[in-house]
Image (cartoon, rainbow, N blue to C red):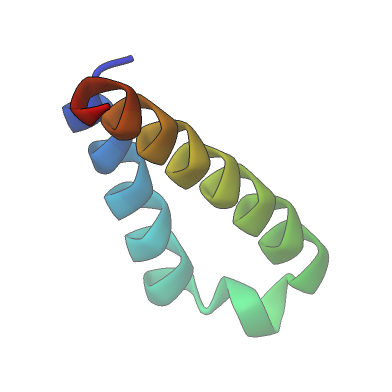
Length: 53
């Protein structure tokens, strides 16, 4: 997955959360989605640091 792909996933997940009100309507699913989002951000950061380091 490229950094652009990762950013796209992050953006899409954030948009999904906002548009659906998932944090209030489906708290368990919201927590799972936050875990996925957190993992994607960490992978993106690690990849970027590898490119810069």
